[in-house]
Amino acid sequence: MTATLPVAGRRAPRGRRLLTDLAGGYLPLVVATLIVALPLVWMVIGSLKTPGEVVTQRLVLFPAHPSLDAYTTASDQIDFRQLFLNSTIVTVVGATIKVLLALTTAYALVFVQFPFKRFIFAVILVALMVPAQVSLIPNYTLIAALGGVNTYWGIILPGLGTAFGTFLLRQQFLSLPKELVEAAEMDGAGHLTRLFRVIVPVSTPTIATVALVTVVNEWNDYLWPLVVTSSARMMTLPVGLTLLRNSEGDVSAYPVLMAGAVVVIVPVLILFAFLQRYIVAGLTQGAVR
Amino acid sequence: MSSGTATAQARVDGAWPRAREPRTSRPGRRDPLALWRSPRRRRDLWVFLLLAGPNVALIVAFCWRPVVQNLQYSTLEWTLGNRTARFVGLGNFVEFFTGEGGRVLWTTLLFTVFTVGGSMLLGLLLALALNRRLVGTTFARSAVFAPFVLSGVGVGLVWVFIFDPTVGVLSNVLGRLHVHMPQWFLQPGPALAMVCIVFVWKNLGYCAVIYLAGLQSVPGDVLEAAALDGAGSWRRFWRITLPLLSPTTFFLLITTILSSLQSFDLIRIMTPLNPGTTTLMYDVYLQAFGGYNRGGYSSALATVLFVILVAVTLLQVRFLERRVHYS
Image (cartoon, rainbow over all chains, first blue to last red; front, top):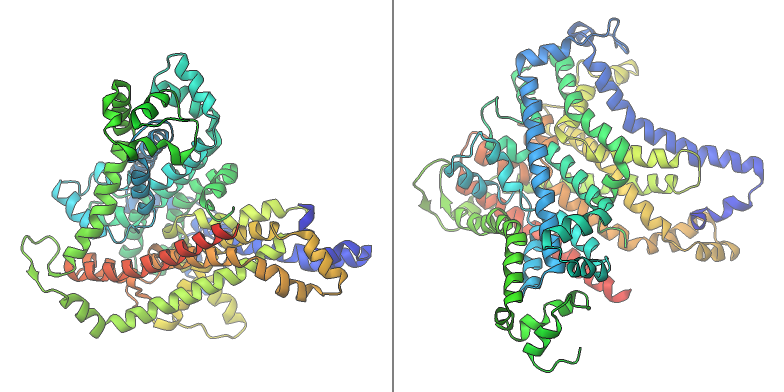
């Protein structure tokens, strides 16, 4: 950390240093934080306004009587609770299976003998680079043929194969001392016991990273759920919100739209606030060597 | 390990192999059947298939197969949901490149250049500001990263509210300053600018955090030596910091280009039917699911997108290999 101190700053006299700190350090810091925070604050304020307060020509900074009307209106137009439930189911089920698959695959790649391991790892790695958009139509026709349109499994299944989690966990497992697993094997522990009793407990930070990034991605996923659901009862939250926007052309709907934005943004924001270290680590993986 | 034959190797390997990755697969490469001869190894094969099989099968089914099938679809004149299709060869590609292709690719190029340039430039400036030991930098660092993890749909809705030409807070503030507010949503140019601004807002923190990691690895003594030699801070930045950051810059360039090319939710939620923001990615969606139901044509566009993405990725792979050699 010390190495990163600006060299000239260290020698500057005290008063001037305070000034440069303020202008060059705190000012951009505050401005940047505000640029991020203000739109989100505006979203929350907007969701508490009445349609009238939005439509007027003069700017209403704070609603006179903050109300949750927008949230109930939104629930009337679209089944908010159902959307939230759908998103939660898809996120929890999808992320759980993905993390489990990543764990077992990474374990197999590192600790189990298999003749074509390198080739299989390459198959997984290249999948990291295949964008979801290219598989859109083929996956849609397959899932539709299997009857998966407007079903939970239809939303979840195509995204289950996980290259990202496998890659990250494999790197972590490779760094573990082999003696750890050997000792467990001597004690007669089977592969699953070795994985869940020995490897998992010492790898919790990486697993947390993979789990959190997976949860965030599942929650925010939009393109595939949009394509594979047409019934409002089966949509996830982001897809349902599009419905809200499309059905309303007039500006008085903004409080309702902001209520929707709050519901889809705030859960992830809270998660991020508490566990940002792990999320940032996962999402910036590969950049920092 | 001094084993001469493959069988001896397999026996020695009875316990866990000592060596790391390369050696674990070596016995198999010499004689794949050696693994089948020992019952214990045979069991390992089954364990491997059980543990890794499902994931690999899913990846092959939903990641690899679509790439091939997409190529096949792109040669068809085919309405999504129809059982019959007509083979048209390269017809879809010809139609795209002689028809709307120019406009769509131009829009994609503009969108990519502005979003990548904007988020990297501002990200670097932000990283420089955050790269100081001041109270609150840790908080600011995670604060600016936050938009990156938020739902694109939610973020799009918030900014549509801010940008709204009649009731939005921006038009209100600009109106007081007697600045005329354009009808963002209707005109191609302003609509594109609007989506670019929001994309940059969302990605800025990512670039800043990566740049920050790069800045931390710039050796302080080199900068100090340059300062003693009389190099001003501007000169030190251009001559030392920026060149040392070039691997980071390249990494960000690639990842941001990839994410920009695949950007979908912001465009869809903010300007659903504006021709000025119909990028290649968005057109893939529109042609198949936007009412046209043109499965084959959309697959052709997806193939074009895929080729571009692979080209960019290969660039990165080549560069990363070189970087490994350097270090």
